[in-house]
Length: 464
Image (cartoon, one colour):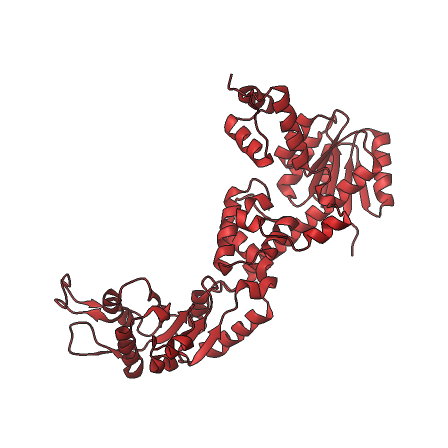
């Protein structure tokens, strides 16, 4: 594994030399610069993993270094150092994209910890980028995501059945992606250039569904002012996807069976039939075999549909696919120009721990929500729905009994921001106008920050 590359930038010769020497002893590859401009110029040719830069320098200050590296090397973590430390400065550093902010003099342990955390952040950002590239490299028509053994078996079945004409029955819980599998079968088949038409058999009452599927002649019923071809005719040469087939009424089951046997449809109100060449893919979240035993579903239709059966696993049965799926949905909803680029480790732990009763659809909704709420490059636990954050951690009791602490919780920038906000609220006695003015933000942002950190304005707060 190659050494991590660090830049140290400081116009104080002694401070620069001491810091560079200390980091080199830790095993890092270190380059030192006496000005921000020199570091930026070198960075255009050799990209560092972490830049530790003083803020106040005559030739290119630390904020210039931060701005330039964020422009041409956004994956590089920037740590700002200053002998004129203030919490206001820390807030400004956070806003402009610095990974961390340290006030001089600092202890060796402080700098060691911040470098370790910066490198971990850099690794996470690059890993997230790799996930995005992997997703981008997938064939453009395919939205199937996952590499678990259960999904590999599904892919094999899709590949084997696609070239044929056999009817396919897809079974799985709601939200597992049954329509995606149906589309994959169609798009891998010789029918790919013909229509793929989905029909939700549970969305309409039977009399309306019949006219939609089979079509009707003028005057066949009240409101039939003209003839209309049905979905079977519209899908001729292609694929008709009958979702929630278990909701189909008995009368329609008989008519569907006839179409499948005779390969022709008769419009409502017509005395003649129309030949159709349609491949049927059906899907259900019910146990059709049990419905057959109960007399709720025709056994002859069931056997016609169940030529090739594809059983989709629930998300709980393919937990190893959650990171790949999460990054896939992140790419989908973080549109071009979005600042969102990945997930923190804590967020991914929560996603992997949750039981996902709504399966992949629920995961997609959770990621879409998180992207819309996020204010930073990585999605945080607080961006997730409450149900996911409230999922019990089975290891929490063991961890607490050992007295373990999470090093990621030490000296975080969130804590700096929270402490500063708490101090301002205390000094202004909760006066919202004064607090917002001191922080340089509007009151709406002040409310959001206070809510985020669980702070209140106190009984004496006012708007004067």
